[in-house]
Amino acid sequence: MEKLGEVYKLSSSERSTDLSFPRGGEGLSVRFEDLIKKLPAAFYATDKDGYIILYNDAAVQLWGREPEIGKDRWCGSFKIFQLDGITEVPLDECPMALTLKKKESVRVDQPYIVECPDGSRKYFIPYPDPIFDLYGNVTGATNMLMDVTESRLAENQKARLAAIIDSSSDAIISKTLNSVITSWNQAAEKMFGYTEEEMIGQSIFKLIPPDRTEEESQILEKIKKGKLVDHYETKRLRKDGKLIDISLTISPIKDSDGNITGASKIARDITRTKILERHKDDFIKMASHELKTPVTSINGYVQLLLHICDEREYKLPDAVKKCLHTIERQVSKLTALITELLDASKMESDKLELRKTQFKLEELIEECVAEARQITLKHAIIFRSDYPGKITADKLRIGQVITNLLSNAIKYSPASDKVAVFLKKEGEYLQIEITDFGIGIDINDQSKIFERFYRVNGREEHTYPGFGIGLFISNEIIRRHGGTVEVKSEKNKGSVFTVTLPLTS
Amino acid sequence: MNSPGKRILVVDDDPDIGAMLKMMLEFKGYRALVIERGEKINILINKDPVDLIILDMLLSGVNGTDICSNLKKDSTTSNIPVIMISAHPNARELCEAAGADSFIAKPFDMHDMLSRITELLKN
Image (cartoon, rainbow over the protein chains, first blue to last red):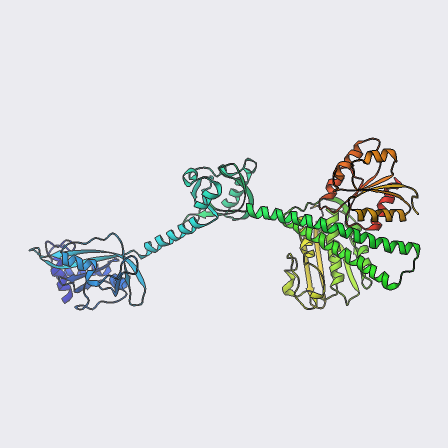
């Protein structure tokens, strides 16, 4: 109550600026203290020598400590720093101290930082004012401390984000649902050649080549549904009229109520990547051509030699014959590898074209099975068909898939003597099941075997040759027909590969 | 021996492949002539008619596809069956567009080559 009395005395001064309350009795002063206590802003008062005589809960919260009455002077803070966070401000030079010394209100234009005893820091702006008595003498001072930590952090965060956006090498653009550009970063300037001033408020169509204008409406349709457009590869126009290859990732922008109000767009210049891809494709094409030419000679001469000997009934020593057959077999493997490499490159650059015709799938499987029988002496390949009808697909490519799966079935079941092939119709789909009783595939590898260059890591598996692209190619071919390749397998029991193809893809 | 005496012209700029085809064809009883370039093919054919042509697609000088489409445009040579061969990845489409009667990718299987020849000579 003593403290309260002091305050009332101070506030009853006619010349007091901040605490000028009408004169009244004790009841009024109680209400006044309540008011101070409940004030959401930090508030404290000192006597004329700067000793704290009053403070509220918000002040305790800001300081992170409770000041000691009669001991704490100028301010209840543990430590105060300037905005740089490094320069400490001695408490007797704090704005409140200056107010009492200069006998005038002090206003600052930058927040201060208070460090609490636990080490945490907060930003605040002080509003200290002196209190005068009837004769104009300073009898004390009040100080309101506005905690601006949240807005300060938000500003910092905003500045950080702005810095990230500006330092990004990807163009970051935002637009409304009417395709009007609302923001444009530095990378966008560099990528497209237009400045921010030239583009804000303009239509995004300025960047879209005339033959691609329909892309924008397709993209907006997705955005309006709240969907993301991810790594969409396309071309855009620069200011100088040059076309550039870009990869776009576009996501919806929502307001605080969750309504979609626009889109943010990240564009990456992939012109260089595209050029490198083309170089790689050209290289693989050239290499495969150059490799195939000598292979043609080797293969031809070996076949010719074997053929001449067979026809003329020259008695070649068995060892020589064996050597020639081995060369023939290895050359055909080499040919298959070169072809696979080229196919994989075509798949990647999306240049694999399907040439669809109508044909009987069971006849094609029969041919592939007959071929596969040539490469194994051990395995009986059993084929059963429940579907004699036709399918529309690329015959050559489907044949390639069946051959790949059959040769895998034989290759990975050296200890077994059987491979089963089953063709059946399931609704609008045809299913080819190829079952072997070989080494099987570990559950952890089953999802990965369709990845490019994936090879199962195991002592046993490493004895089998290959690039690890056969299944990647098969899967891609079937995928492009609108079908799937699935595997069920158990280690040391065998595997079942199921190809599902739509009747008309 | 099948089709004894039938004349087959081989155009391939790889001498080893040319020689290999010649040996193979002669072994099978055909008469084979190998040239490495195709510029003078018409003069050659007019002087000494051939029954079938095996034509590589990528040649030095005039390309195999150009040679083929010229042969197919000329009424005096359009009936001669042409088998085009190549190791080029997009060769099949290009050769079919040039009017080739058949296409075989390099490296080819000898038995496949021989059966295509027999088939085309039958018609």
